[in-house]
Image 1 (cartoon, rainbow, N blue to C red):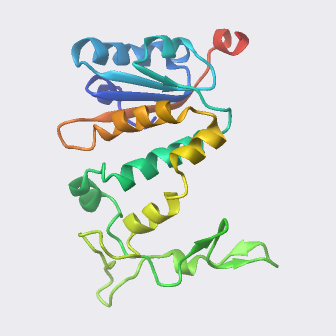
Image 2 (image 1 turned 90 degrees about the vertical axis):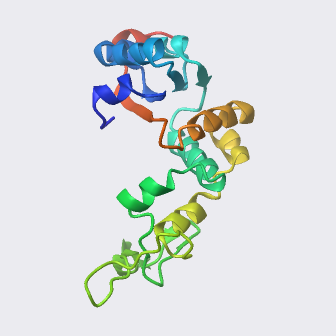
Image 3 (image 1 turned 45 degrees about the vertical axis):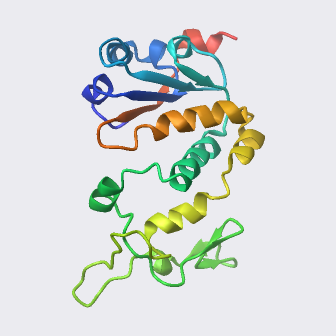
Length: 208
């Protein structure tokens, strides 16, 4: 987590993943309960076990240990495919509209520029296109096939709900429920925050 505690207090949706904040970070988890009580916030917990944090969750999803990235990749695919994106924000404050150099690619798990003999990458094709004025070429409309937004959309397209269910063991309907909840924050009037990898308490680690 990199956001301030105040962001939790004011959130409409909180996702806890990779940790058990209720026991490992009780002072921080206080703001989750504050948000639920006073801001009508909803809580999602994604975890291989059912920790104390999950006992207060509005939605809980199990997953196999070590498959967090596949789960989050599926969430990204859902959001991008269904246009659950705050476009004004991503075009103004991220590199989503930046155009990547021609020649960039990703095939069979290997990025462009890989030297198999040296087992290293030449990353020159990974950079942005830059004009003579020194500024990066952009497409605020997010239509260019090599803008970061569309490359990201293409990259995560493989993370379908079926793939998430197969890799993570998370029931498809449970996964889609959580995606829908996250997608509800894709507008300026709503906010979500993530509490990720905030540790486990000894009690929860020792329990079965």
